[in-house]
Length: 288
Image 1 (cartoon, rainbow, N blue to C red):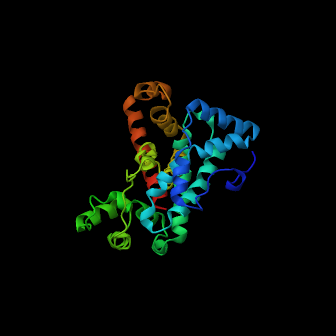
Image 2 (image 1 turned 30 degrees about the vertical axis):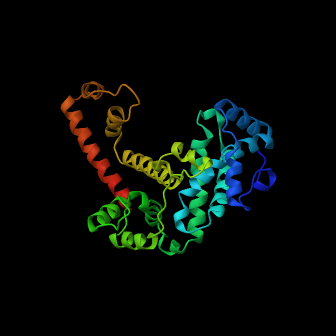
Image 3 (image 1 turned 90 degrees about the vertical axis):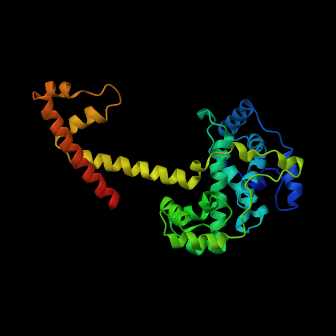
């Protein structure tokens, strides 16, 4: 598939008047699902840049909506939008119309990812947002605060526990972010802002960092399970797989008792011992 960039597509640029740009992208109509699928197939199969342009411009207002949520970090909205547009184009390039998912749900992850990287590269707080836990704190503290007031000690402890950071880090982050809170919703002061694409964007649990973390955890769990199974003898592994890992129609204790020529109670004992051994093995891997 051909590589394309903003310069290759005749679309509005956020580099001029921001108000004019926002009004301009707000005039591009949303696509129906049928139109979206048709354009996506044309781009995928024929490298049709006109089709790619239609996909991009119909979602530029979504980038504007997402950018509003990051204005509290003190960076120019126009720059956030430009970074988000890059994420949008990456999403269009990778979008698979056969999955039955609308482009907006797929693209918002890429849009946010580009904005996150831009913020971390440029904001003054980057020096303390170096670990995965600190990055999560950086981008989630505002939404986790129960009010605009300063956090109390119990609230600090609760947030620190949820995000896996020290209470002192929560206090420092709040201090640095203080006085910059803005609403994530449009102001509603003009016709363009009264329509809010943010309303149908993916939920917070689909934020790119969370998705990546979940994928990594799933991979580690899979590796841990395979290693734990490998530590069992053949009979124990057969019992665990038949009882706990069968995709359907798991065997009963009596079924396995008949298979191995022992009592159901003996099968239960072997099963419990094997599960205990696997638990120890997986706990050791998680702690490594």
